[in-house]
Image: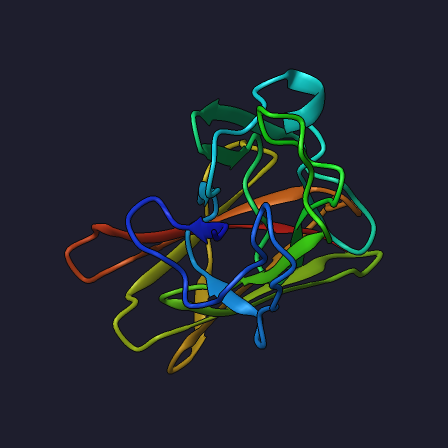
Length: 201
């Protein structure tokens, strides 16, 4: 009997503990994730308890914060979705604790964890270096990218200027720690290629 965490469309390549046996193994590597609102589907070997208190035992967290999650159960599956986007460059840990219950009342023998990191398909790096006068917002991209823009806390779109073969930047007055940058990259046909989210540190 096994427990699996899968994406919306495919099984991730790591084995997990059985829900009702002593067999256990863990992920060897951190999974790169490019979808900022990626759902995780956790498949158990038997029906799980769909009680809210049980589902809410499942967490996704960074080093400093627990994410707000949308959790739903359907027989032997639990779907975990973030209520807010994952942040570019952040590392996350999905945890199913040992106290998580099946419908029968049985629990996991040991906790199960999965680490993943938010990366980009066309965005390779983002930085926002704080400065009292103007914060420099810099985005490094793949060669296919023709334009980059960002918004602050879901405000108006601001275009970055190309300052290298694969990099764009702009000085921004008034940025504060914790501001959310929504970064969008476009191709030469002005079509959106990717959107990522970055928190000013």
